Image (cartoon, rainbow, N blue to C red; front, side, top):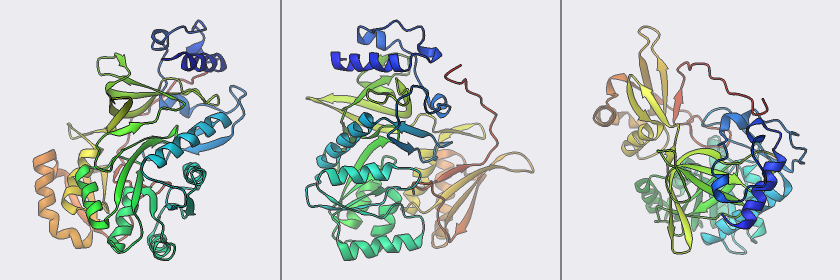
Length: 398
């Protein structure tokens, strides 16, 4: 940790000093070791955060998609917003964006303002933007295809399911040279398939609504993404409880500019690996820390369920619903797939049995409608409707 970072951390601790968890901290902190002893912050604490707690003026508001639970509304100061914007410009330029390019932006413009800061970043780098927003239905998909054919953008900024739907129609008959994918990391084999179908370069882009984007692959085939640390401080919480700047474990992020919300040592929720190569740090994302599922005594994950079905169907137009059978209270999984894919039923049962041991719990049904989506347009592949024990969280101001 360098001196400017430590100075900003001390300013943040002063701003949030009224919170109980920071009242006993003696300021100023004098080194990184003292910083590593500060308590961690999690999503439950921030979901209870109310505006005006520090008196810092709110400049912009973003919201998480709700795909991992209750929405979280995030407030940014003006300086924080501008730092995020500058970092996004660097991220987009790193994958080849140049002045005069034209981007079709399929990220959300509604309550979630992530699409807005993305648009501003493209414009700040000299690119034009078609602000279509998420593809929430077949009509919006056809509109996206029509705009690509008429306006000929060379960039698409979207989620995985959106570019799959677009290139399923266009194949290689389009002007798009590369796509920037947000949301969740792609399975490498599926990214290769998308690239082969579309003829485009596909870049994984990693970030979070709390902090905007901060990593992107140097090359479409790279499994690791380069970290852009401007305004952010990253740590790794390893499984043994130790903290390091590089290693594997849970990612911890501190926003050095945001005086509106206490993003000090925030557990983002992802398991990652950070390594240093020459002068730069690179990150690989493995999935959500809380991604595990307990189904009939077997531990699996959203990711394994999705990948198992995706490998067989070779497209993302499916969803799983997990419920309790009202007759015997056993877990039951209903896999909804398009009717033309029903011929794969036996293969799905076999794979679910061999890989996950869950075939006896699966019911397969055809669907002809849309896959459920979050407010940002990402697919909700796994919907867990089982009752959960009531959980409480202490108010951060208590």
